[in-house]
Image 1 (tube, rainbow, N blue to C red):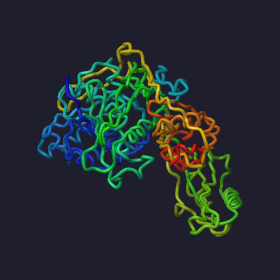
Image 2: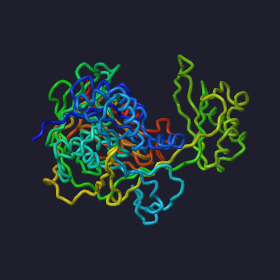
Image 3: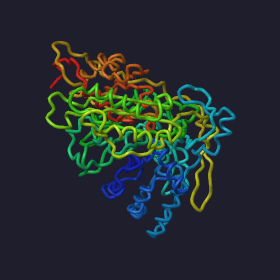
Image 4: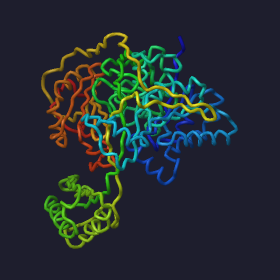
Length: 587
């Protein structure tokens, strides 16, 4: 049986700390360096980059990192696996090869392709091979796609490592695949080793967002030391798929049951975490603090994956104009109405002439304000249309022209008049795995095809969800307090939906939360969700609830008109809401 493999993360998103690769390579022993650069929005950004620079649709910051650490990785035998290839994994591989030549080293570089379905879209749609991820309806419109990428699993990465690759670059692989792949390769797992694979997928999910596992975006950040410079995490994965999470000694942040639980709740749905390699049952996870900055994850059970792969499609959504006006002092609602009425009087178009018009008043003002800022609320207007001219200067001029002729204290946020800006629309789809093979290309060598189909096989044993704590919620007197006094939260985007997970840190607090926070109560606390479909899922083994708010983000992050278009702060809003909490639970 092989020793555990230590897999480190050095990037959680496109734009993360460039020095993290060097910090992880030089800060302590690791076997594999990984990094996640991709998200639905990132694919749209890379598509626009590729238009300006052919063969440039990859994360150039990854290449910058390789300039810093590639020599050390070769010297120490550290493998590198990353999805930084984005839309051009071949271009990214060539760029890294150029870096290697400049450093005088000769690593074996491979890349995995096959995820990009854009060249095949007409034939796939004609054959009804693409269906909408949520509705199941066939996708019929073959026009104007910007990106269309299937989420590939780990077996192309495994094949590349089996062929001796030192660096493996992928396109749109799942976030967890870049961790699961090296673990499966190192331990020699087969495609039906469900429980081991599920453990590695859970580990990959925890570390794929980098410092979100070590204190970043953590509700109880005030308890975490060294938050000015949080260290990146690593996962030490054993042959059975169990994992110990940690970080290099002397770095900021912490690895605790709380930080790991928080990240487990990030951007998930129900207890079944579906992936291309395995369905990971999050309701079987067990967490244990085994030492300072060391958390063990074990007991994870897996089931066969679905026969389809998820596909991320981005389409041009048209153009948008977003404008804000400060409403200061008294008569906020009346001022907002006058600004809106005067704008449409000045605008050369009527509201019905646009594809979409959204208005809202954001009441950030306070009574008897002690500062100009505390006296201010905002009127926000978002307009969308396929015609760039309609949302251009004529519209923004109509707002600016009100500066001296409408409300007192008129201040426009955003500066001078400007044209509309393009935005993309996200559409999730499914495609049969059998028609999306992976291709492993070794630079200067052969190309190998790897099937995306997972062989049929039963689970190692019937999945048995962990029951969780048996403690009862305390009774007695209550006190009004914010939910965040006791509970942590983590939220995020999944296309047009948002997820919101909330977790307790004691058995008694979990029992009260489970009884209190129903779907109806959540809608009451978050009125924005009142008319939405909301799914509620229990994860008692990690004292957590997860909610999926369908349609909160409309047509996806790039098209959302919410102030927080990625729902990253949704959980903190819920934590700020007050409830009558048993005094026995409160500090």
